[in-house]
Image (cartoon, rainbow, N blue to C red):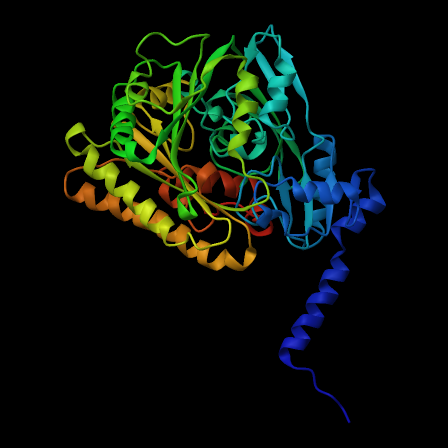
Length: 495
C-alpha cells in the first residue's frame, strides 16, 4: 500500500533536507577553522550556561558555543552563518534577561569571552575594551592607573550589551551615557567584513551603534574615553517601607535640584512574600573621597536604618554592588520613562506608580521564590546636556524636562511560573505607561519625549518605535545589513 505524506510531513522533510544541504555552523567551524568550540556535556559548556543572570536564559541550550579570539575569527563565523540558515546569539556578560537576546535554543552561541582585551593608551586617554569583559574586569585592569571609563554600576555586568543599549553609569551626570564615550567601534558586518566606525570612518554606523543595539553588526572592541579617577565615596542606605512617601519626595527633589554632578543614586524598593523583604535599598556614589556637606541630605535626613557608605576604590564599590544580583533565579526586567512631576504633584504621581508596582507585585507573591523590585533612576537635565555635548546618541534625550527611568525586576525560581510572571511584567509596564499618560492628559506631567531605556527593556516592548531616531536607525540598518541577516537570524529589539 502506497503511503501519502501529509503537507506538514513534506514541509518538515524538505526543511530538514534544506538545512542539511546548507550545512551546520558548529560542524563547519570545527572542520574549517581553529576556533575553540564547546558542546554539551563539556565542563566549559556547562559553566558558560550557568553564567547568565537569569537561569531562564541558561536553560536554553545552544548546539555549540564558539569562542573567537579576534575580529577575524568572528568574521569567519559570520561567513559560515551566511552559508546556512542557523539562528544564532552573541553573548557578552549574560546580563540581559530576555530569552533569545544573548541566549539560544539549538543554534550556535558566539561567546565573546575571549575578546577580553583592556588596553590603556594614556597619551591619547583612551582604553580599548573587548566585549568579553565584565566591568569589574575592566576596573581590575585599570587599577593603579588613575583612570576609568564610563561603565556599569555593578561589577558583574558585561561590557557588550550594556554599551550597545546606551549604558547608564554612576558617572553619567559628568560624562553622559557610556555610548557618548566611545571613540570608535570595531565591527563585523553581516557580509563578514571588518570595519572601524568612528566620527571619521562610517560615521552613520558609529552614530547608530550608540544605543542602537545589535541590529548592525557584532562589535569586537570598543575604544572608550579614559577619564581621570581617584577614590570614590559610596555604598548603601537602607530604609523601612514606612518611609516611602518621604523617599519618593527626596528622589523627586534630588532629580530637579541636582546638587552635584559628581553624585549619583539608584533608589530601589524590594518586596517578597510574607514581608520577609519589604524595604528600600539606596545605592549611592560620590566621585571623590568624601561628598561635600549637604549633597545627600535629601536622603540622610530621613533616617536610614543602615548607612555603610565609605571611601573606596571605584572598582571595589562596583564589586561590592554585586550583592544585588540573586544568582539561581529566573529574571524578568522591564522599564518605563516619565517626566519629573512638580513638587505640588509629585506625591500623587510618584505615589500612584509606586502603588501600582506594589499592588501588581502583591498579586504574584505566591510564586515560588519571587522577589519584586522597582528602581527609580534620576535622569536630570545635566545628563542629557552632557550626552549632546559628546555627540549625541540614538536615545536623543533633550533637556526640556528632567526625567526618571524606572526599572522593574522580578526574580523567581521555577519555569512553570513563566506565564504568570510574563503577565505580571506586562501589567507593570503597561499600567505604568497608562499612569504617565493619564497624568500627562490631566496636566500633572509635562508633555515630553519619553523613549525606553534599552538596557532595562522587556522583549515585548517596542524599543525602536519609542525612539524619534527610528527612521535613521532603519536607514543605517538597510545600508549595512540589506539582507536582514541580523534582523532575521538573531535576537534583540527589532525595527
